[in-house]
Length: 448
Ligand code: GLU
Image 1 (cartoon, rainbow, N blue to C red):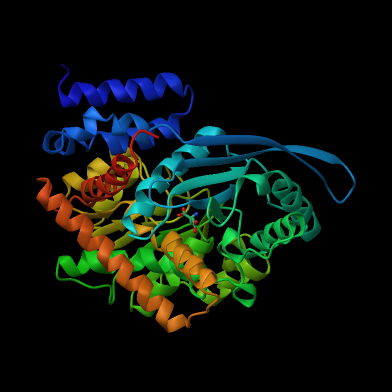
Image 2 (image 1 turned 120 degrees about the vertical axis):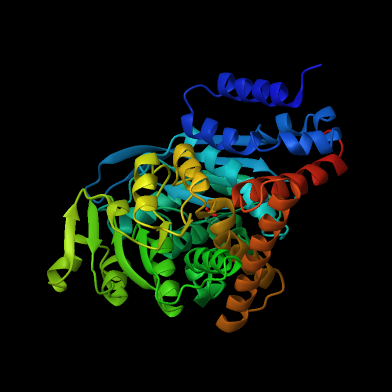
C-alpha cells in the first residue's frame, strides 16, 4: 500500500502524463494536491473513493471552431473552449478569457482553480472556464460583435442557468457579455437572465459585479492586515495590471486610505510617487481603450517605464492583478527586501510557486488568488440569485454582502490552516477548506 505522499506523487505523475504540454495546468494541480497529505491522513475515505484522482479530471471539455469576418471582409478562424470542471456544488461557473495566449491547458488550469475558489465562497456554484485565442486588441466594436455572435452560435448548446453559467475574464467585459447574451437570446428564444453573469446593470446585471474582484481582493488584504493588528490607512501600494481587477482594486485601496503609486500593462509601468490619479486610468482604459503610456503625457510628474519591472518599486502592499506567473522568485525577494508586508493575488496564479515560498519563508501575509480574488465570482453568484428571484439589490447592500463573504473566506482559510498545522498559511487553508467541501458533496452523490 503506498503512503499518502507516494499516492499524491503518483496522481501528479498521471496528471502530467495524461495532459502533456499543459504546464500551467500541472502547476495549478501540484499547488493544490501537495497540500492535501494531512487531509488524507485524517480522512482516509477520500483516498478510498479516489476523490483526488476524480477532482483532477474535468467532467467535460469542449473545443470548437469560431469563424468570423473582420471589417475588411477577411475571414479568420479562432478556437473556442469551454471546460466544465466540477459540478458537485452547483452548475459550472467561471469566466471566458479572450487572449491570444489561450490554449486548452490555460483554460484547464483556470477551471481547476475555479473549483476551489467557488467552493470557498460558500455559494452553490460548481466550476468551469472557457474562452478563445482571439485577440480583442485593436478590434472594432462590430468585429467584437461578430466574433461574440459566432462564439455563442456554438457555445449556446452547452450552457444554461442550471447547467453552466459563463461570465467575463481577461478580454471579456460587459460589452462582450452583451453581444454574447444577445445571440443566446436570439438562438434559444428565451430571455434567460441567469445564463451569463457580468451583465450590464441596465438589463439584469448585479451592481458591484464590475468592481467585485478588485474590491474583494482589497477586503481580503484588509482582513489579513487586521489579523496582524494593522490596516490599509497610509500604506503604499503597487498594483500590477490596469484592467478591470486592477482598476477597482486601486479604487478600493484609495477609499480605505492607502496610496497607490504604480500600475502597469503588458507594455510598461506607470510610477506616480504622489499617488495615481485613478480617473485618468479609468478614462484611458474603460472609455478610450488606450495604453497606460498615455498617462505620463497627462501627468508630467509621473514616470512611464517601457518594459519596466513593477515589483522593483518599494511598497508595503503588492497586489498582482495582471496575469499568471507575473511575479517570480527574484521579484518576490526584491519585494521582501523593500519591506513588503502583504501580497494578495487579484489575478489567477500570478505568483510562481518559488515566489510563494519566498513570501512564506519571510513571514509575509500572502493571500492566494482562489481566496483573495473570489469576490468576483461570489458577486456573480449574487447576480444569479437576483436573476432567479427577478430582483435587483442596491449597491450598498451588495457591497456589504461581498465584504462579509471576503471576511468569511479569510476566517475559513485562517482557521483551517491552524487546524491542519500551518498557522498563517492561507494557501494551505484555502486548499484544504475548499477541497473538503467539494469532496464531501462528491461522496454524497456516489460514483458519478
Ligand atoms: N473570471 C473571474 C474569475 O476568475 C470571474 C468568474 C465569474 O464571475 O464567473 O473568478
